[in-house]
Image 1 (cartoon, rainbow over the protein chains, first blue to last red):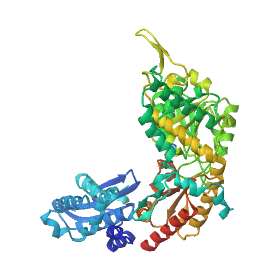
Image 2: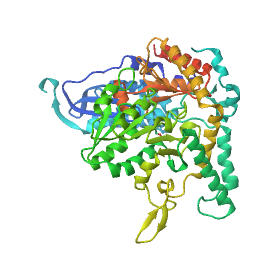
Image 3: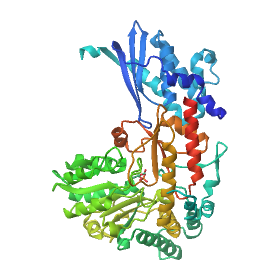
Image 4: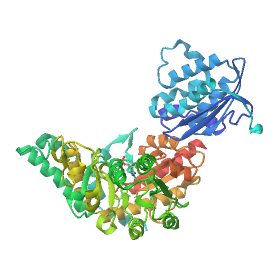
Length: 153
Length: 413
Ligand SMILES: Cc1ncc(COP(=O)(O)O)c(C=O)c1O
């Protein structure tokens, strides 16, 4: 496989695509949002359970390409247990990474698992795929909801 | 049946030399251009005609008495005659230059629609329309309070003709139908639709954007009232397209845009509109584009639309057969008549991932909903990968596509 392509579709991404983590609807969530990418028809719903400014639980459902699914999956495993403020910082970092604006960032080292998405910056058409879950998470953070439960609907 | 004889229907080696872009490479691989439904490549004669116009004849048309203006007008009007002959229209008055299919349909909506559609009326379209034959009617329907009715399709991607018969009520004032589906490839029975509509005096508009490039289209034989197509999908430039309309309708329709060229005389008290087709061509048109489109039509007419249809049918049949052999590949629809397009989905692999992998094999396909979201909803999928063919494509390119799809499946296993 071509090196650039290999860089985009790293094994980690393929794995998360195949068995995404936290892929489920969350019955007792207090924040959620739906993200839609009209260009590709990708849809995602993010569920959050936030208590004391901390993300106690996060999950997602939807359809999308490997990049968008892996991005949602990895995001969910990173953000679980993080504070709302930390989540916003991660968003910033991730966004700079995939748009190629991270090169001089001193915080490079603590990218952790996110580093696998660095290849995306070579594929401008795919930036939206990688960032859909993150944008949706941000709007879910802002969109406080009554605790909804499917049992009571 | 596909046989190697198909390669002899047209002189494919010579033809490929006429399209300079086909020699290019992508990611180090020879370009395998299978996105012809989005736009087709241009032969050298078209490219030359555009630069020759700017180098030798550039001037405005219908205005000057000077040499250049007369030369440009002659070429622009010559292109109109070429198009008239190509679709067998009765006269040049029936050929209106637009920016493309989208503008052609919007023109009919805004002139015919504004005059003849009102509350209680109905317009029939189909479930497989391109957004450009849905949205203009929706916008107008809201304003004029008429209803949009939709002919559904079956799993094979064919119109349910019984449903069409049922929809043809006295309230219907127009049928606007796609000839060849750009997302499934279905060739619709437009002749039958037009006959049935005409039995009830209902006019019919045909979106022929994916038809005129694949087989002969004769407006007299079809007896359609309007027909729209785009230059760039028929080997001509972007920014130019055609609306054919029967003179009898065009005469009754109000102008589309107001401005220069579309008037006979203007005073502040009264303006009289120009004769057909100029009534619908306000402002300075895309002169070079029209000339280029004329050249493109000359080019394919020289090859012969019958031959193009026969050659492409072989390619399509071959590709469909090969793709069907791959486990996990599902082809969208199975129409009895197909032209140009094969849309497919691969189990557990999103079309965008396929598109990116194919790109690295040099293969250009379109992935997405192809401006036909109702079709995607119908099949309950978000998107497809679409390979679409032109007469310059090779059987070997179908093989490259098929092998590339197999490779993607391997990676995602
Ligand atoms: C069937 C059909 N109708 C209409 C259009 C719109 O054509 P244009 O964008 O050239 O106006 C297209 C192009 O994708 C098409 O395939």
